[in-house]
Amino acid sequence: MLQSEQISANETILYEHSFDESSHPSTPPNIVIFPYDVSDIQKVVGYANDRSVPLTPYGIGSGLEGQAIPVKQGISLDFQHMNKVLEVRPEDLLVKVQPGITREELNQTLKKYGLFFPIDPGANATIGGMVSTNASGTTAVRYGAMRQQIVDLEVVLADGRKIRTGSLASKSSSGYNLTNLFAGSEGTLGIFTEIVLKVYGIPETVSSVRSCFPSVKDCGQAAVALLTSGVSITRIELVDERSIREMNKFHNTTYEELPTLFIEITGNEAGVNHDTAFTKDILEDLNCSTVLIETDSKKRAVLWKARHELSYAFRHKPNCSTIGTDVCVPLSSLPTIIEKTRKKIDSLGLDGAIFGHVGDGNFHTLILFDPNSPTETEKAETVNEAIVSWALSYGGTCTGEHGVGLGKQKFQKKEHGESLEIMMGIKRMLDPNNIMNPGKIFPELDK
Image (cartoon, one colour):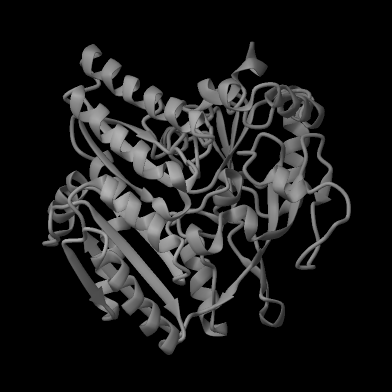
């Protein structure tokens, strides 16, 4: 039996679990449950499945597409007590964690071993939430997304069964890849209870480069040139002039208000020095107006903090709503789609910013609009639709890292075609009563 302190119907607690960082409407659950271990989760899942009660996992509420919003109400399952590092295996470069631990808490533990976990979406998200959405972030150009870091998951299915999806081996050709199936499933197929991740040695030397250009298209072209040059880049971020202006205001920085690339190079000292000098040469040949190299750790921390919190600077402006895009395209298409996006925003007279992880073709647009103005709301949605349409026409995707959740559902059929029915078939097989985070990814299942 669960203890009384693990269950809450307090109005404040219900409200706290009714929203995330997205602009999607809030919906409170009927009840919030705080499991201590996997047996608690199995009990809750069994109860919910027998009675067809909706069940929505909740980490820390940092998601941007409403995955943690219990749109069908029911139970919100909060993992704040399942937040431990269960095992560190330094020789194997692996760590086993519970889903409620945040990435910063994890890295604090790993630091004593000279290790770190590289996936950095900006927000201090929980590892379970990051697996759920296949999060990535600024370091994806070097390390990939969450799917590339997971070697094993313990998952509780809708019928209460507990399964493992992988092993501790670095690779396998045995059977279907269930780990990749569950990663990015947004809580619609099962509940994560343990996660085994790859970890890496902390690099010896870090160098940051900030370079300014006349246009976002020039930034995009420079990013492509650097990525094909062989330079050991760990991060390469594009921030347009509108974003720099907001960044300066929010963080009291004084960066030039021009389209800018933020670049980070890591490795041993000799390699970093060589690659930094080579990067500077490439940038100066590509219409770059300014190249600044920063090795001071405090100044680098300020730079990346400003970049990470850029989305918050816009999203928390008073009397303003935002629509955010999260498309990812082949690198060759990146300069063109960025230029088209800027022209589209300006042609409609909207206030909007462009920034993102251009190293892997993933960029974001934040469109600011008055939610009380039907005209502005329609214009903002027009930009969103156009960007996704362009991305799909280039062979890209409607979401590179935020996930589908609520906001990207309408693009699923266009992106996946007949494959969408296969996905829904898997969902129906594993969750026939549709209790696992219903209302997300597949709107057709609720009809």
